[in-house]
Length: 262
Ligand SMILES: [Ca+2]
Ligand SMILES: [Ca+2]
Figure 1 (cartoon, protein in one colour):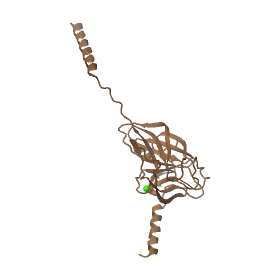
Figure 2 (cartoon, protein in one colour; figure 1 turned 30 degrees about the vertical axis):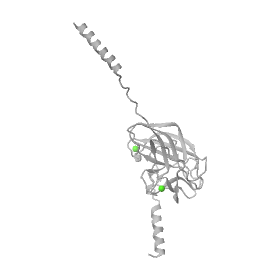
Figure 3 (cartoon, rainbow, N blue to C red; figure 1 turned 45 degrees about the vertical axis):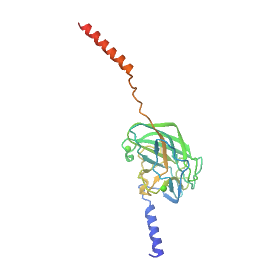
Figure 4 (cartoon, rainbow, N blue to C red; figure 1 turned 180 degrees about the vertical axis):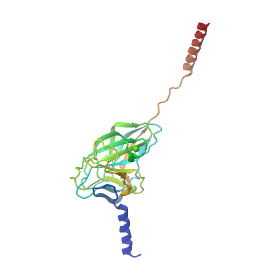
């Protein structure tokens, strides 16, 4: 195969892979591939509950190209084992380097519980947190300890996402705030866009664009959460002494009832 044909095929494959196909898109959605970066800072904590869908390496940035950026929500759908309650203590987000990405910029973290595990028909809002970007070096997660840890004790999925509140929709120029792992999509990373800015808090489903990001480019958002499995309170064991007292009381009551009835 000659070099020209090979190059043509590669270009075609890249074009197909990254061809925008987001329904209802009024914006120039943009994916910027980068050389894969291993993201190991900070190290993953050794805790019971580790919610993550990425593979530690980031391969691209997603956002709005062209001259008019837009606020939107990008979230991951997690399915932890909720047969025993869990408590989320931290949310992590990797923000890429790139145009208009600055430390200190406002972002909003949003958490939902989805009893039926299907984000397409909506989910129950749980909490939101106003935060700022901590790092844009591309290989350090911004780490957000939750002032009020979130407890989940009902079956279902947990959705955790970010809104780029620092963007003035229609004014801010090109911004790609969502870092992606593109190695192997888990099919759990969603894009939610409203006709205006997302409400505070954003209510799902979104009314403009609402789908997994795989229709545009297959991958996983670099959003994680960590926490603990909560122990179900144990029923106090009855001591032998307690049982003896209980049996004695029952026997005494029985004797009194028999005497009263004769
Ligand atoms: Ca990767
Ligand atoms: Ca649902």
